[in-house]
Image 1 (tube, rainbow, N blue to C red):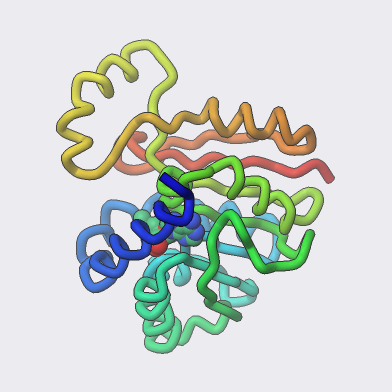
Image 2: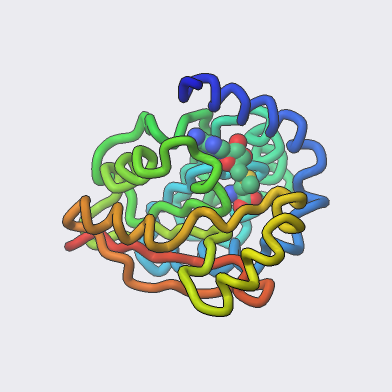
Length: 213
Ligand SMILES: C[S@@+](CC[C@H](N)C(=O)[O-])C[C@H]1O[C@@H](n2cnc3c(N)ncnc32)[C@H](O)[C@@H]1O
């Protein structure tokens, strides 16, 4: 299966999700989205959101931020554009169709890159992280929010037990923070500096990865 095939599958899936996404996810993801936006804004004003979707996170960036949002799905982006217009989100400077693994953006142009609830959907997460690192300024951060599986102990046993039920809801525990740490170690100038459990009960996590200054 080629990567191109996977991307087309994602586009088809999110064309169907676009009209109903906000109703399903607005409450469940809000805590992680708000905290991810706050962590990014603490790094500076120039923020890239990869996988911006219907734009649920955009309202959480401060009014003086300069936000660029990209997404594979033109249908999700159309919903984000509606939100920018309806809510008057002047901090959003540009929304564009783009693949996370092939960002048409200049090197070292953002203080932070947010990736809320996206990384586990990308066929080549390390390729996407390489691109985010490229567009990030020294001292900046990649802020990943996602379902990430427990690495061991009782939490992992509980996750394994409930995995079939959780899988029916479309969530998996396969992606772990250790994968982000391994990527950061290989990159050399990136470091996981914080892992924060968020609502509901740590089911989702926010991981901050800083680029050496
Ligand atoms: C679960 S939604 C998250 C949307 C938004 N970040 C949020 O928190 O509500 C995942 C989004 O990632 C996008 N996506 C999936 N694969 C992508 C890729 N390779 N490049 C860019 N966006 C991608 C989808 O089109 C979808 O809009």
